[in-house]
Image (cartoon, rainbow, N blue to C red; front, top):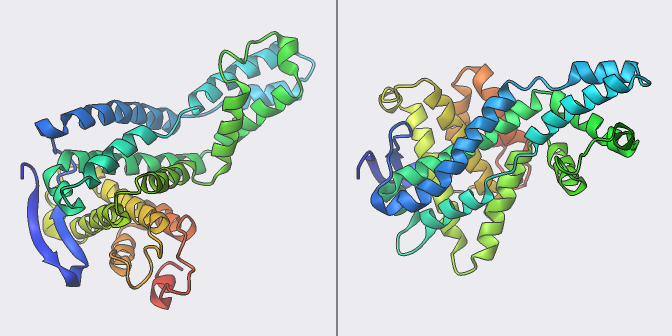
Length: 319
């Protein structure tokens, strides 16, 4: 089992198998190495993106000066160059190919998803890291208005054809096609989460020989794993880094949302393999400053919360 500690066998009362996954120290076996290396390169870039987004201040000062002095071409050029540098950074893309490789590895026969998570813990950790990146990106995007402001200025500048007057080459940086895609992307409240959900749904629809249950069982098992680690002091004490707790919460919420988008009846129905009451409770037991954004993600980015099949108790927990 390597770094994997089996803590409970299948238990219907817990609605699924439960494991302690070592999110801090899992290392790939030889069989995992090819996929792990492919995904690791993407995750390294993702960490760079998060770091830049966290320190993102934008081109607000330069843009304000340019707007206040519309006839000063030097200020217009300064604002454009500053804004273009920001826009180029924002043209990042979701690691869809990496997600596909992981989903294929964690759901392919002859093993069941639970067995995959037991056998390929390092890949399970990478899947968790993609979920963590997704929710972290969206939280930073929602709390940084400079992103939308900078991009709005960029689009306005192009529409006025001011770029021609300044004799700047935008096509070599961010062309119109890329700008249109970015506009649609950043118009979403949670752009990375929407892209992740679409990519997972696409994976299920394109793999018609793979039962949808293989994908949803992988997601529900991950949710169960994270919930057990968060609500059990013995398991929590095994983490050496306090950030791992937030990591677990983000992963749990991420797989719940994916399950709700991919499964026909969603995560909130009585037939769901995810213990939604338990998951919501474990979030509410944490400090609100670290979980309010995650609770809002469950409230506003899931598909089935307001379905008739969702119990009043669960709706009340999320009010």
